[in-house]
Structure formats: structure tokens, C-alpha cells
Length: 264
Image 1 (cartoon, one colour):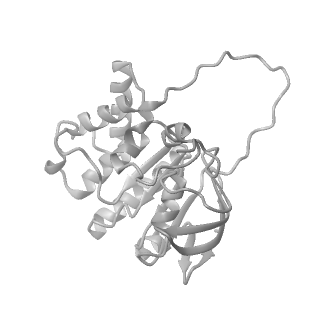
Image 2 (cartoon, rainbow, N blue to C red; image 1 turned 135 degrees about the vertical axis):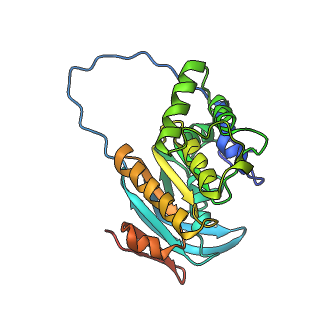
């Protein structure tokens, strides 16, 4: 298989969360540059003239949009419109067949297979169906994810675990198993897991699809708080127009194969 080809049998969701174990942060010797440098202003996400496929069927043609660092953007559209396929492109689960795609500083048109774990380590992924390990407690789920992404120091892992559980208001739930938690609490664990590695971008795929209205609103509020307080870019696919109206932000709508961008 060519090195820059993504395997047809894409890794399952647990692999997406853990395959960064294949990579470690490279260590480089720092040098001192006395010349001031201009700050880097690359987009967090960029698609330019991209054709989007579901299996072998073209569903979106010539898709183009840019999301700046620190933005919160909704991606909306009917089931099958292509929202999940766009997120899979950004995860390098699907290959870029035409146009240009970049995410968190990686060119996804030319990315090599061995570099994909490095990309995914910069992303936090939140799924509609949680994807928690049912035989592990909240704490064990988070520790498992940290070890899989290269964490070694037990004290540092414990400190980060406490930090993310505090962010999602689950400080007292770390000993519980997923089946002992409500749907909203399970989704909060998923958000905590997504935050472990200080991601540049959070990709949330229908994160409130299985939740009641009150809990869904709490998750919307939490993600907006993280975006505002942590400066993390968020791209969230959703059908929840009631909460989009309440938590106003830029919205990209897929309608009849076209993108309509509010550009708020």
C-alpha cells in the first residue's frame, strides 16, 4: 500500500481515540532567535474545492469553507447530507480525493499513514453514542486513553484527570462505571476524554442526539464554555435547531447539496 494511502478498512472509533499511542512527541533542541516573529495565523480547519463521498457516491461537490482558530461552528443538515463524512475527512478516516483539506496544521491531501496518529492527538472527538469502555470506571477510561496517547508519569496523569473531570463537573463520579451514569454524564465523560491532550480542535458528531432537551442544553453550554474559556476550536454537527437559536454561533448548513454559511 502506498505510504500516503489511507486503508479502505478505516480504524474503528476506539482506534481513533487510542492510535496516537503509535507516536511520541519528538524532542528537538531549542534555539534562541533574537528576531521577533510574526504570530502564526493558520486556519484551524480549511476545505477548498473538496468533493465529499459516502462510500463511492458523490454527495457534495466543490465544498469550501475555513474555520479560524478559536471559532465555534455548527454543521447542520439532514441525515445523509454529508456532515459525518466531512468530520471523517478531518479525522483522516476518509481519503481526500479532490481539492485541499487541512486540519490542526496537517495537510490531509498528502498526509502519510504514519502521521495520522500525530493529527489525531491534536483533535478531541466526541461521539453521539459515547464509545466508553463499559468494563472500566470513569477514571479507568480516562487513564486508558492517556496511556494510549503516550502519557507515562502517573502523577501527571492523575493531575490531568482531575482537571478534566472538574471542567465537566464530574469530580465525584470517577469511581462509577458507564452503566451507573446518566446519558448526560456519559457524554460529559466523553468530553473530558476529548480534552485530555489539550486539543486544538474538537470535532463533535451529534453529541446531544441521544439526550433529553434539558441535558442537551447542558452539553451545549459546556461546549461553549470550553470554547470560550480554553480557546479550543469546536466544529459540531447537530440537528438541534432549538439550541442553535439559543446558543447563537456561526452555522454552516448543508441543503440540497449546497453549503449555506451564516459567517457570524
